[in-house]
Amino acid sequence: MAAKDSNSLVYSLSVFVILTLGFGVAWYFSIDHKNQLNQKLAETSKAEATAKAAIHNLEDEVNSLKSLVGLPGATDEIVEGGKAVIVKHAGDATSVPTALEAAMVTNAKNRDLASQSATDQLSQTYTKLAELNKSVVAHEQAMQAMQASVREKEDELRVKDKLHSEKLAKAEGDIDAKKSELRTEQDNFDTFLKTSAIEIEILEKEIAQQRKALIVLRRDKLKLEGSTFERPDGALTVVDHNSNTCYLNIGTADELRVGIQFSVYAAGGSEAGRTLNAKEVKGKIEVIDLLGDHLAEARIIPGTEKATDPLTVGDAIFSSIYEPGRKLQIAVVGLLDFDGNPESDREEFRRITASAGIEVVLEVDDDAVILGQNGEQVPESEISSRMTSDTRFLVIGAPGDRSSADESRILIYDQIESHQREMTKAAENNGVYVLSLSSFLDFIGYSSKRLVSTGAAPLQR
Image 1 (cartoon, rainbow, N blue to C red):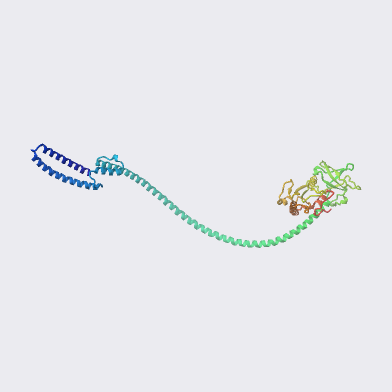
Image 2: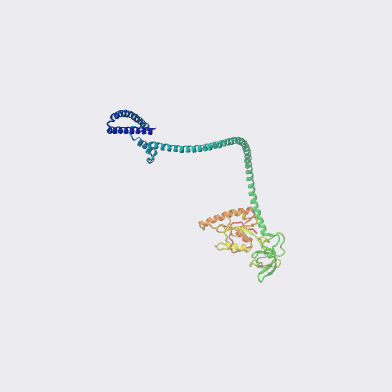
């Protein structure tokens, strides 16, 4: 509307100018027409006044329009001011048309396009909002289902909790009853322990007395076994005094071993239980060769044969360590010194026992190390299991001279004594005879220049 008013004003001004020029030209060209011109001038003046009035009205409208569009005080820069406003909001002056109307039309079109784009975006927003609402509804439905499930589980839990509480109460009652029974049983057990302790003390005293009696009986039995025999081990079949040899009627089938010594008794003296008195021994022999199942060669040990009663065919032979089908087993503890020299005679002892077919199942050496039958090291805890009822003797060696020994040797002697106590206890519990070294050597018929006494009771013959 502002554009139309501006055009009207321009047209009015143009007409005014044309008329003015026309009247002036007419005045210059025709004086005759002066009156007409004056009349027309008057008319023109009247028209001019009318035009001026119209122009004044238009100017008022223009000023009102300027105030309306925010450009008060402007003169003829309405278009330029409008462009400036469009540039400010559009940001690009090159696209603004020269005509304000065209600019307004372009702006309106752009506004319509922006409005359409905004409408499209709003439609998309509504679509997404609908989708979101649908998702929210689905989520709320899932939440309601979960809440229903939770309520169901809570109800189930309350039921289970009630049942558990009832079971717990019942279990606590049962526990209280069991505690009462346990207290009763404990009281009965305490009474039993007191009674048993008294009975155990009485039994231990009785066992100790029986053990002492058993030791005495075992010693008596050993003496009896070492001095009597039910039957001889064999007999002499050939005697050759020239070569100082003889032959026996026992051999490999009788498990005879080279090195075993026999005492020889007169023929016909083999009645049961006959005493083997040393005065009746005619001599001693040592097996030197095995010739057959029941044939062996032996040598007559020099100095043992009686000159007044020489060995003859048929004489009976007996050995304390020979038993067909079974080797003599022994255990050894303590220092071994029996041939008069200051050195240990342990290797000689091993040679003697090996040649006599004696098995050493347990041995404590000179360094207090416990050795098994095959030379393996044995802990002290296995002493009782290694020394069984099959072991016949526990041989006790010397305790060691502490007066001239250094501190390290004294510690070794202490260990040897500790092992000796454990082995003696095991021997008493398993029926093993305890002998001194000298008594054992005498028992197997060994003789030397000097036998060292060890303090153990000798075997009486």
